[in-house]
Image 1: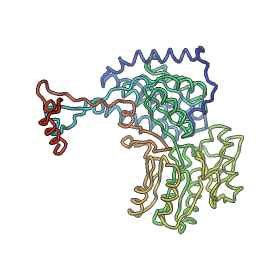
Image 2: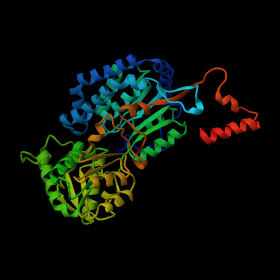
Image 3: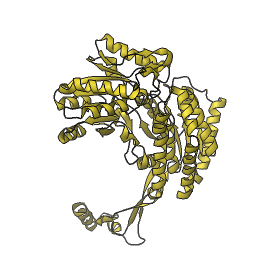
Image 4: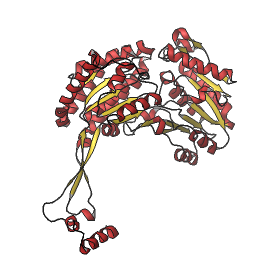
Amino acid sequence: MHSAVSVPSAASVPANSPAANAFQAQFEALRQRAPALRREGVAERRARLQKLHDWLHANRPAIHEALLADFRKPAAETDMTEIWTSLVELKHTVKHLKQWMAPRSVGTSMALLGTRSWVQVEPKGVVLIISPWNYPFYLAVGPLISAIAAGNAVVIKPAEQTPATSALLQRMCEELFRPEEVVLIQGDKEVATELLKLPWDHIFFTGSPEVGKIVMRAAAQHLSGLTLELGGKNPAVVDETANLRDAAEKIVWGKFLNNGQTCVAPDYLLVQESVQPALLKELAAAIQRAYNPDGGGIQQSDSLARVVNQHHFARLAGLLEDAQTRGATVAAGGTVDGSQNYIEPTILTNVPAGARILEEEIFGPLLPVLTFKNLNETADYINARLKPLAQYVFSSNAENRRYLLENVSAGGAGVNETVLHFAHPELPTGGVGNSGLGKAHGHSGFLAFSNEKGVMRQRVGFTGIKAMYPPYTPKVRRLIGLLVKYL
């Protein structure tokens, strides 16, 4: 993901200012309410989630309008990537919440006979969710669902780059929740910096690795729990056995969905040399079918979102210009229009090493295509770089698929598919290394906002372990020796 907040600077909300005092007061109100939320059972938490579910259905047109205002996101894409994904998370959580909240018995070893042990979950307490601009609704609501299910009091800090959606989220929180249970705080980097000074029990941040490091340093001051959903350069490998038309359609969908502003979008392709010309034709044709079916021009398509703002448009235009200056070839697309923050879905070939587009996370509708001869070259190339959030493998060869999954480290993976694994509620999602810390969605999201407390109950009176209490006589040492040797 790209930055949910701008990089905090030394300047922030002044200490003891009205704003800083207000944040502290809100935090204390949440802290006082947290014990009551902790005691709530399945029914109370489900009721809160059901209210959110009903609000999503009732406010579907308002969600469409907010995303359209922020970066001309098509209503159908909003339905699929912001509303449906939120509803999937909600329904899955409500269905499984009783099971997740129940104590889980664990076995007993021979050395601990006579004891009974279990794991019980408890909410972490007061948590902060910092959400990004690229999926500004879903990536705020998804973690909120997990946090509520786990029994926490919540503060949401949405991205300032998507003000219409942030305003809608604020209305949602005010209509559905008591202010000492869930509160949304809008603002820029100074507000985020000030919030990060508070002693949160957990921080869930979605954004860039650069800002993730800042959040991690802030969390360290209070040893706050932390989930970092970051990003990276996600590779898609297409070998000579792949169905090229199918692969092209799925790559085009996953790459240009949300105009490329997707943390798990393919960032570059590694294509086997023998099939590169054919794949390029299929990619170009798939772009036309998706965004220019009537021949009126891609820029007129109502199925393509826009770059979120002028700042990110300039960054992406700069990546394209740098690649072309260094000798890259535009195989498809290439048109830009700053008046609309419009960049045409673009395929680039012959991109030389050192081009910025191969070094930086793209996060836009530009797709460089590299070639390989032997499969092991792809794993070497990917592993020589920072670990990606996702990897994609297009192949009809089971051994090739196995090789790439086993030899490339990534947060998640799709085989003959892109992006869709992120919407599967049974799959943990998150990064590894530079692409993230911790997992989210479904049970993994519930656990991220929970403490798993291990509990052992011992019988009263004589126990086996008492025979090994001090003093350590020869008999006790023999017993301990037997314990070490056999149990």
